[in-house]
Amino acid sequence: MSAPPVIRVDDLVLSYGGEPVCAPVSFTLHPGRALGLVGANGSGKSTVLRAVLGLLAPVSGTLTVLGRPVDERERAFRAQVSSVLDDDAYFPALTVGEHLLLTARGHGLPDAGDVVLELLEDFGLIDHANVLPVALSSGQRRRLLLAAGFARPRRLLVLDEPEQRLDQRMRARLAERLRAETAGGGAVLLATHDPELLEAVAHRAVLVADDTSARLSVADAARAIRAEPAR
Ligand SMILES: Nc1ncnc2c1ncn2[C@@H]1O[C@H](COP(=O)(O)OP(=O)(O)OP(=O)(O)O)[C@@H](O)[C@H]1O
Image (cartoon, rainbow, N blue to C red; front, side):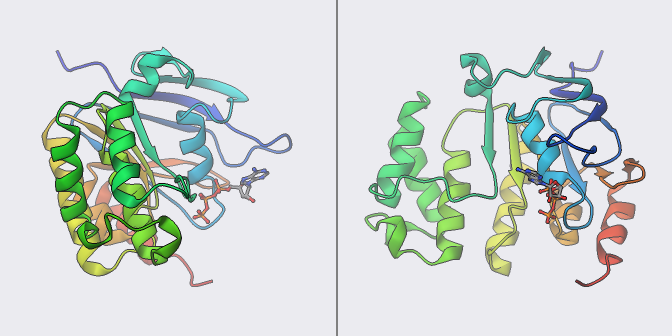
């Protein structure tokens, strides 16, 4: 028997108070798998991620994470779900190293110091460990936020366009890390506009759109991204 899904979404409808943001969305995500959300700008990918994280209540449909309706205030939810959204959520008065250490220790990670050192090296931040976020480039700040997403225990990792502002080398390293995440039994849900990252990491994809939200193979989803009209 296969393990129960980490996320189950059935006919999920989301809105910010007016019309639905996109067509109803359905998918399941199992442990050890990565699912990519693809779709044009403004199609609703981040909105779906927000719902999965409990930041937006569904209008209708069902949504369970780790077998329960989402309540981001529950300790069990916070202990198992790590996310990196498209925002600059860091402590301005903590250095890069302090930020990662606080995250790791706050979540009770064993060997926090060793984990932080490894993350600083892997995300190319070792020379900036004692620097405040304000003195980082925008790509370096993005690396810090991504590193923080890995600086804690998790069964589900939710990432909103993690490729943003990363150079090619760092994108490849991120892809490697995400492959290791699923190989180790973790689940990954990511919204992306990067067909190469999708192909490197995801097992399945969902196209989020106005008219219909379709479940796609990774090859078809990568093709859909490459066919998106330039804006
Ligand atoms: N807080 C909000 N209040 C009202 N409308 C919102 C809010 N956030 C997003 N929207 C609208 O919801 C729609 C979907 O936005 P969303 O950010 O989910 O798209 P996306 O697929 O992630 O886009 P992108 O690829 O540009 O990041 C857009 O029309 C957007 O204007």
